[in-house]
Length: 137
Image 1: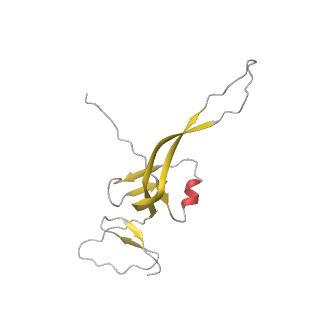
Image 2: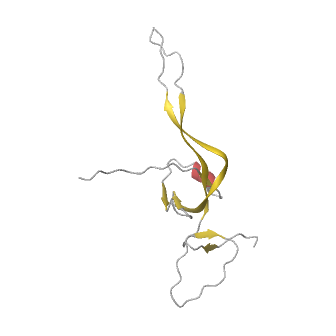
């Protein structure tokens, strides 16, 4: 049997949009990222689609992992303090993935023309991912 291995990456993600607060309040978060190594990654989070670009962050982003600290006890066996958590630095990054809500559009069939896009609707970029149109344009 061939050696099997998985590649694991940590990514700092900045979500923008109206659904962000609802997303963070969810009991469980299911996420899938498509094309993480591309110029325009797409991410699906709990059924919502986001598209974005990598940008330089202001300063460094530090990523920590929570580690449980063993509870110390006295000679009598009573716990002397509440269990606490300790943070361990996992890595740091100078880049972040900035994601905005994206709206996927069905590709037009050959020979049909599409009308212009109204403010608040979506535009399709060169990668085929829908992106919000700036309503001020």
